[in-house]
Length: 110
Length: 113
Image (cartoon, rainbow over all chains, first blue to last red; front, side):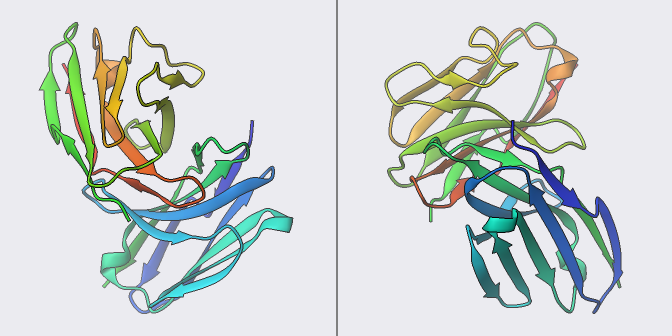
């Protein structure tokens, strides 16, 4: 089956720093989503990005589908950015099924 | 977007009992799914909840253990049957439309003693 790998697994930043999270996937996909799981377990939708670049405030994402990777950029990090960031890919075949990476755990220190 | 609610938000259950989790979506959606997140792990797809028919289960998950219903486009239930401590996890439902993003409920935190 498809493999979804995220790096780095853990990241510690000082408040105000920038970071890049990476998601590699091993096969063609219908689309890709980025989520932030807050400390209460809620999954927050960040980006729905099958290809191209999107920006939302301090966050932006780029997916290069032909090279099978996506990047999530966090600029000027804040303590509220802490949590786990997941990428998830939707399998081809119109099933809607999402396969999740193992996540990147981000800790932003004040 | 879709707003998804789940009940209960958390529960503590005894070994050998069953728990039914409800998932309600505020708008009609094409797809509904159930995921499990074991402690410290990522999310794993349990099954696709099909409206008016049997759910489609992923490898490693069976209907006897995780019966699922979806009587209409906006509601689904997942039952965790004959529970053991290994079933302690967060259970999440998701919903969406084809070629659109999926949204997740807040999850149900289950602890089995």
